[in-house]
Structures are given as C-alpha cells and as structure tokens.
Image (cartoon, rainbow, N blue to C red):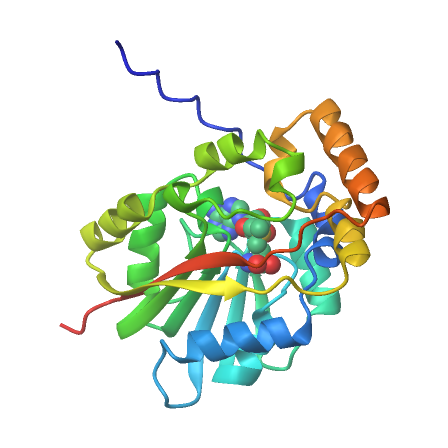
Length: 263
Ligand SMILES: C[S@@+](CC[C@H](N)C(=O)[O-])C[C@H]1O[C@@H](n2cnc3c(N)ncnc32)[C@H](O)[C@@H]1O
C-alpha cells in the first residue's frame, strides 16, 4: 500500500492578528515556574556573570526580564510581531533588556556577540530553519549555547485539555519537527549537541483559572482548528468543570542544548 502523502504545511501563525491580544494573559506563568525554568537553563550555561543573551522570538517578554535578572545581560529580545513587541516594551521592561524588531533568519545583532540564545516555543514558527541556524551560529561567541525549547512531533505532550480537542494532536504533529530532524539541522550548521532534556511542567494552579486562561485561546494550535471544534471542546470542558471531572496531570516540556564549538 502507498504511504499517505505528507500533510500540506500549515499556514504560519501571524501573532499580529489575534494572538498578541491575549497571549500575555492566556500564557502567564507563576513566578515559581519562571524561576524553575531559569534554574534549569542556568544548569546548561556557564557559571560566570554577566552573560549576554538573546531571547529569540521573545513575544510579550514572558521570560526576557527574568533572563536579565538571572544571567546579568544585557538581554536582547528579538521579535517579528510588532503587536507582541509593543506589549513587551510596555509590560516587560527591565533596565538590561532591549526589544528589537527582527526574526531568527535575520538577527539584528553583531557577529560573535552573545553568550547564549534562548528560543522558547518560537522555533516551529521559523519558516527558513537552516537560515536561522546559520544566524544563531553567527551571533554566538565560540562556546556559546542555544537553548531550544520546543515541542517535537515524536513527543507531543499529553496536556490536560488534549481530550477535548482530539484533532489538536494531528495539528501539532504537522506544526512541529522531530527531535532528530532538529538535531541534524543544527549539527549541519556546525553546532554540537550537548543535551536533550525533558523537564516536568507542573499542573500549575487552580483548574477554573486554567480553563479561563485556555478560553483566551492563546495557543497557536487553536489557530488551525475550526470554530465548531473549539466551541465543542470548550462546551465539554465547561461540563466537566461543573462536574468536577477534569483530570489534572503534569506534562513534559522538551528542550535541546546546542553549543557553537570553539575553533
Ligand atoms: C508561542 S510565542 C513564544 C513567545 C515567547 N518566547 C514565550 O515563550 O512567551 C512564538 C513567538 O515566535 C515569534 N516568531 C514567529 N516567527 C518567528 C521568526 N521567524 N523568528 C523569531 N520569532 C518568530 C512569534 O511572533 C511569537 O511571538
């Protein structure tokens, strides 16, 4: 039997259209979760301070000030969507953070200027991934590191809300690359793979608040689903919430650490 033809690529999500209006509120993380990410990332970066960093695809600046606090900075948040960047500039200010218009394929920073780059759930939005890998190699100092936090097609996390939106699994399989493809792409650009880490993402907080945030639809997979699918899923969530039947569970988040080798 012939294998199924590959699914057509998904249209890119433009964060200037809808997502910027709800992202900061819909994807807010408790301070403890931000601190836990910082501690985890610190374990994969040099101990010396300060470290100059780039938050590539910084969005509304969810992590950018914490990167400056943890690593000293300066930290440059690079973000293509003006709607997201303006929220970062207003609400995620820090004396050692600057937000810049730009994208992974054309990073507005000089050669050999950064100790680390963080891409937090932005890599799958990059259309020209080899160009992004070349640009990250250009801006990093020798020995500099890329922390690439992403979902991978071969390990789609089983979020508590997945069962209400069954097609979201297939949509995410079309959205994300595999871990092996990602490693091969960065190694072809000269990077060394240091670690592939799966960290637990705790089920954070009170379920009614999580439902209210999810209803803001600040999750890019929802951009690829129909209104009918979303309405149906949220109606079933409401019914289970009222019945106390939502199953809480932690999920896992993947990241890969790459190093630009010293010559
Ligand atoms: C899911 S949001 C993540 C934002 C932030 N890193 C966070 O975790 O809150 C994805 C971000 O990637 C940005 N993005 C899209 N295409 C990009 C590209 N080619 N280079 C860098 N960032 C991009 C989007 O505009 C959006 O702000």
